[in-house]
Image 1 (cartoon, rainbow, N blue to C red):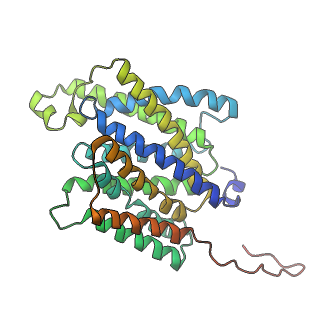
Image 2: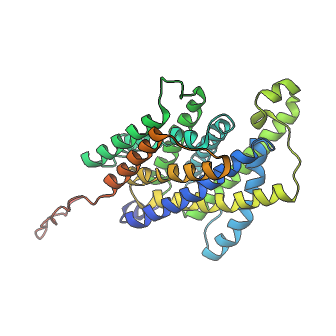
Image 3: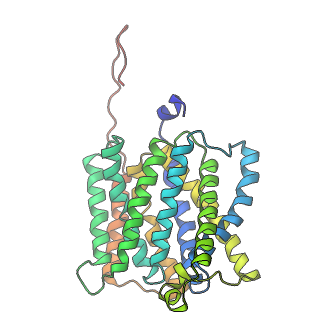
Length: 321
């Protein structure tokens, strides 16, 4: 990666727009995955969705002259592996949790991202933005309600996904900023394809018994029959995944993760909407209050900070670094 890639000015407004559109697409895609989780396996979704996404990406990459092989392959493939593990943990929870609850659990990631941004890459997080992160955390607590009957141990899976996702976004900002979003999306979807095929092959070779498969059919079941309907759904998911992965990569490349991660919270509103449309999930009053807190947190973090007066540089003296 060239040195100039790390010194490009941030584009915060455009980064926020990219993440808002991306999470809207992803919430819809996750609702569709939950809908088909009783018919198809996780590995089948990974492989079939990637098969649909890659033909969409290839012509776009040729037109935009984006490289198919990343400039920083080790970091880029590690980023992709972390994201695949993120989706494995998150999707594994969907058959057991409401979409809105799983979404809130995984969206502890902005808190983790802000902490890791400060600890690992020295990203400055102002007291006001820390206040926004805290407010968002209170919203998450209000929705998850740990320690009560409303809490499920399955919520630990999306919490693990949150940690993995945060690590991948830190890598996007610190190590993969010089890659094009299309290259990152192509690498990610290629990793999904390989993972789905390997998972399917291993399960076939394992030849698990019917009782074992029935305990977790989405993870351990056989490859389900796919007709026009199923392949059409995979084509839709592939298109959404291509748009989401490119949009998210772009957002985290061009703006500070502590800001973009907070606007990731918009996924919760979208997830609640699609949860109602697809599964008639109706959030209770405490859940709605939590979402309001999370929205307020996003607005607090987005508020522009005070501009520092420009430094006066005298002749022969170096400017601020």
